Length: 338
Image 1 (tube, helix red, strand yellow):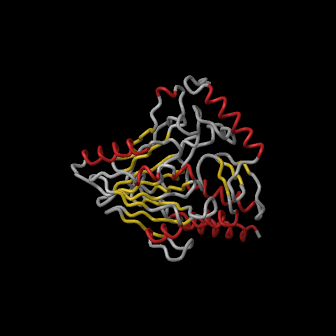
Image 2 (cartoon, one colour):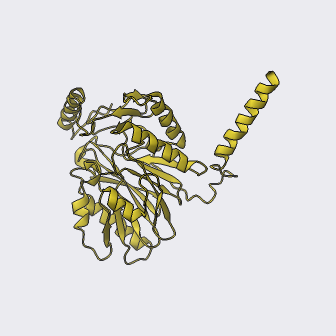
Image 3 (tube, rainbow, N blue to C red):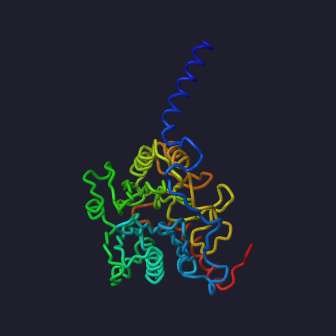
């Protein structure tokens, strides 16, 4: 019996190793993955809003820029991602209310052009999903008429996304976008929103997971779809290197299981942005534990929050939001720093 147990354990170990071995690099030298750097801490919403820029721009590497909207403009503080290829650039999302994205976007693109001795580059705008805190800058970006930055705009709609990404069988087919010597895979992940997508950048091995996985409250509109989409991301990333999973928000603190109240604009002790592929596996396990019945569930680095189709806050959540917003707006010019 003992010998059979040992053989069974060995067989399972080999299977597990074979399943994940493809995602490993043979040497700790980064392989052909293009490296970059994330900041130790992001600006959030203060402590002094008079001193805070509307957008923080971080250079991950020379061809990938992360833009974060200040909480002083909107508590959502979303992250946007700007990727450059040889032929065109891609902007993922346009920000939340009061973002005033265009001046910052133009500056970053024109600085990139100057650095690379280029006169122009087309910019395609796509969306992680259709919620207002990720599309509020759409009109302003569409109104941008600059010969150096011609805009191709893909609205946050299923049919438009399918056409652009060449997806015939939504949501079970993986689409692709070629920026010129930079290929992006597009994974449909409905559940948070009907038009949610994740992007996998082969160049940096980053999975951009939108609002479906980040350090915070994962608002689930359709539990069955959300679970299938999580499994779709796990299946897609099997055998691939995943350097980071980067989502659209940070709502967790650095203290495990503790988030910032909804409506928080200043987060001096917030969780890091990056999650690993292990977080996807943890999310799947948590979803399976619900057995198809929506319920809130807190995990170390994020929590599952089922919500209704209208995305309205519950009365208790609305009360927390109103209280938090009042406290932080009352002190937005000089926030308490503890």
